[in-house]
Length: 334
Image (cartoon, rainbow, N blue to C red):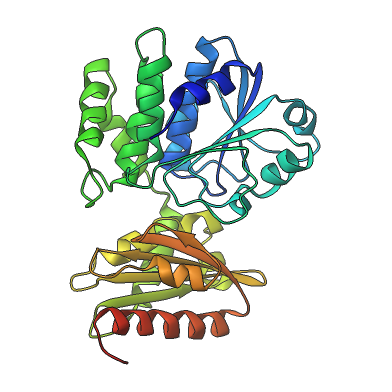
């Protein structure tokens, strides 16, 4: 059981607090950060949200008042290294904090990790608040606010909490969706959150370049394992050919998973001297064991890794492991 009193005491004793999440932030990490930011501001804390990569366009609605800062080495270092505490959301693996994590570690800033991903071995976090049974880290923030938010939770806090559970449950459609997730949605509505506007921001505001890139992806999707495995690769030339950017690949694996008959979708995305690999499963197959073998991690049905090597070599390695795992879980050999 989580001892929220100890967590609250750690936060209360800090005057200056860094809030952050993983690189290529999603709705859960950002929503949790925004909800906590407004809580801490009400408590008269000097706090700032820093992210290690660009804010995705679909979450710009969370950035009212430009409270989310894209970390700039040198410019932001002085503020961060003088912080009393860093509160970190949904990161999964310390390495996914990139340069922000490196700076926090180098300056020995105490790190409070709040997450629903399994803890990685040799984690450098000072305090870990981890509950893998919840659908979203935002649920843990909800629990904390219910205990220690002195005034009623504000609309801005609810917007963050709602975004967190909306996105990590696939619009309340995934099997991880709980009563608490729906309770957060109900309370968000009661507080006046415009859930239609949030849904449009997250799911219906995609740049044309992203959709052009996805059209190329669909043209190149390959099916294996009797149609249960769908995989695709993206290289730098494909991205450049439609004027897209690297960030525009986010969400493609989920979209390919939606193909009828597909149980597992895999993206292999070329990224300089390595490849980003994403796995998504509808539930028949557990896929995080594959990500772990590749040096990554994540949830049973949604996970990933960064694998060094050329695109061709990584594709071969990933497909061999994935096909073998599907065959193993079917109780058969390939």
